[in-house]
Image (cartoon, rainbow, N blue to C red; front, side, top):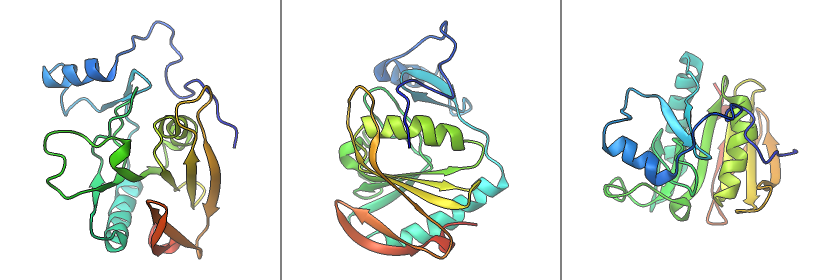
Length: 200
């Protein structure tokens, strides 16, 4: 899959302002941005989150139930909560992170805490495939899944390049209904999940 180095689904307006992660966090702390503002910071752009319908939200319930059964002790599943990267503060649909519910009371997880990020994609499929892969690869997130509701498959991205000129994942594999999907954390398979148990 060819990755582009520039935003494809946002950031096309050259007059749009850009903000650092620290500036974005101050906007939240001072109340300039609130929970009612459905935005996230992607590559220093404050970007509207994609709308979510019943299929997306229902799939999140299905995925949450399945993943919680597969995560071993020492890992916790966070749902639609913040992860902090060098130039972004996304809110992925799921993040498997080291720790417990009390581990992130004073800070957000960083890539060092993350084993897996997951996006459920229908309206957001272009952004999740084009932009989020680049953002997460640049941030050295080790494993990224897209639960692609449009094509009814799960896309697995691994071996992130880190902060290179054209960040990308070096390995890409798709899993179809009927396949078994390994859940890999810290380089070890901790569970095997049925794709049918993750798709609606």
